[in-house]
Image 1 (cartoon, one colour):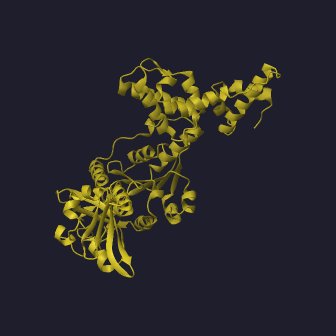
Image 2: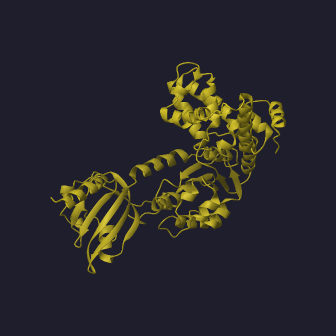
Image 3: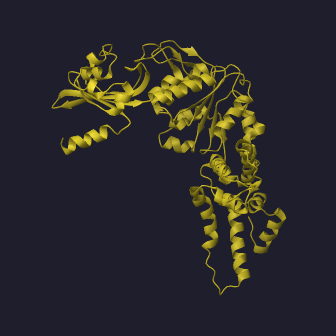
Length: 458
């Protein structure tokens, strides 16, 4: 075997996608390891054999490879569900491309992505969600936070729960968008009906479309009569998470559903009326998504009847001590610990960090440290090395990197540092005196005195 063939063999057998290549007569030339796992066959049973002999039930209509050979046209992202040789139900998304040379079709290559596990997971989620007695209780009173901007958002969400209008929740990853969506549902008149959430970024377009709108038997290989999420959420709430990750073509179909109030299953000609309240989330500025072509402008306007924009944790740092206490209490119970508080170093490090992962990141770090602690105080050494690198090294470097000029009186030097810290706190809180005092952990009157001392004004 020459180098090129050996290299090709290594590549084909070490990729996640199944590869099946046939010649112009439908005889298998290449059948890689991933395809073996998908279809439950061994390459020795397949290579050199004709498709019609291997799969007697396939024809030019049901086989993407045979169809591609006949038409000479590629088949892109075809969603298929079928039984493999072992009798297991398999879900794949296939792309089949004809191979041409000198104007003649020499064969076709099929690339299969295995979505069986993802589909099974969503099937289980749908079974759990499809309850007539509503979803788990999520109450606004259980939401943690005391910053004025965040409390305004909660009040807006409470008002949204008293309507049936669509809601668009905007917020970075980890800010609690789904929690607020569930609270809106639980506080609404729809709370006895299903709440169903789907992550638009987790599935390819062809699979997501079937899950959203449902399918009818015969609409594609392995299709059965099955209601989609819209039907299963009828009377309740459907959360479309990360709507900016939904393929644009599918966004157009969603817009039609929102405007007309009915859905049509894939392969069906019958319209089904639905009564579903839509809540969508997006993890970036909507106008950025529109400019980048990830979100249709007309869909954005249709979804944003009520806009709820959750501030990131770095803009509400006065809530960090509250979250620390809540998470310590939570994991004291779950992990059977007796932690009382965090050390000053941990507290100061948390306040100096920008938290790109927001509340979820804070929660995960505390959970990890709580697994390591044996005493009553959560200290720096209880956190994973990568967390220490991110938070505490960054915090301590601000002190260690200071260069003192011994020609300057110490009092004046320290005053300059204090003034700089105060200005930073004011900038982070948009010059809100109360918030800045909270960030600095001093009384408002003390901060006001220092502002007067250093001649700092808004």
